[in-house]
Length: 613
Ligand code: ADP
Image (cartoon, helix red, strand yellow):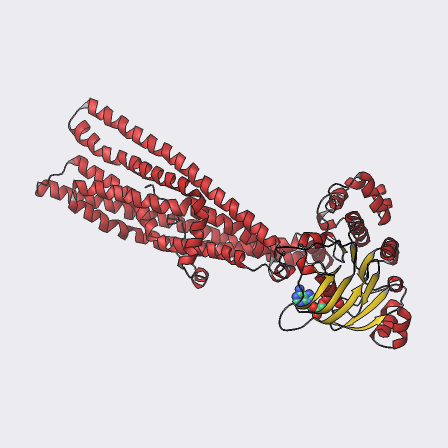
């Protein structure tokens, strides 16, 4: 088959799906200019690619043209020398053409890889600067798709679409010039029939594409079932509810559908080849017929070699024409890819690093919430006029019903979100004026959902302080009440924690998280007290670890246990986003408000349970 490249090949997607049509980007000059800006650093290499394409297109067509000489001068002229000479020339041209093709594809891929390398890094950087809101609102799968598939798509666009367009135009031009030089009439027949014969290709491609999409959907379904049932928690659910048979039925049904679709898809390919080959063989016959009539009846100035050349060139034209007919679709698809990626690049960084930061010493000075209002989205204000001062070295406990806004208050301090209005000051400086790194270095958070990486305990600890010594780690673990557990492990600090720390109990995870924060040694400790998931022994061990910290260090904690609350210098009672009461335990109990009700229902119980989900 002819040497055409690009998405327009027989199995390329020559059609835009409904979804693609609906999401067609508006192609503006600005968009094209922006795409070009990524190519700009590689202009020189791109020019070289074009030169390579030009030379290799000509060299690859030469054998077809030389065929004429082989027939006329070698075979019909019965000249052995000429025959051998032309055969060698033809082989050499083909060899050189392919050799330059290698150089071209090396350059091509080099450029594509470098551009996508730049893009990937830029994207990763950008995404890391996005606020927590972005990660809460966006599907993790979408983010990963954009990082991987979309950027990989761009790579294909640059490495193949772009060069295939140029190479196809070159091939066609050279072929047409060669044909017109021999005979106008035959050249015109060629121009007319080639595009006609690409029509069945397009039809068959469409059927096949529809089937491919169906089988992709089916594949997604199968993956979905596997994902749900083959995960640790999924299997647990299946086993505990005795759903093995049900899941098997579900899986085998999807599997069956897949088999049928696959058979149809493979067969569609076969039919397609029958049609394609029939049609492509009509072309040469037409040239033989018309050429023959011209030569025999009209005594046209045509040799057998000329007609052979025409037929050979015709064969080289199908793929480039087909591919060029799809340029518009390729172009749209490429632009859609770029604009999807740019959409992410254009998302504004919500929590910005200031340009000229002021970085005060965070180990001194108070933390002040000054008329802070906040909402996750416009519909509902979550925090309303929050005012309090956390003095250096003190501990504040925040209590309140579930959903009242306690975690939200805490999230504002490391600027996971920025305040809506009002300000948070630390040592007199608005935290928005400090560099994010400086601010976050000053804060250590132990939350209910402590994320441990799938690695060893040591690796998880070193994440907080890469240069920590063995002694530092042991000391932190002792303080966090986890060292006895580590000592019992065969591998000690090098024991694996499992995927997300799943090999550890909730309490052990929590204490490792405390050790990690102790290693970090921040100016401010934040604890979101874990409750419901822990038994009383685990709880008291955690309590033992936390107590010395809150006694001596600046700390703020969401408290559920009376013992912790009693340790705090001040208690803030939050209800529906407002601080409704504040003070010491004894005063608050007497006041007979929200706190007193919480005290009666929650804090005073020996085994503390949280009302949260
Ligand atoms: P608490 O810690 O007191 O249980 P939160 O601060 O977690 O309460 O939540 C306060 C309110 O904010 C709740 O109504 C909750 O539904 C809402 N909320 C929490 N996180 C988000 C979020 N990422 N997007 C939108 N709303 C949220």
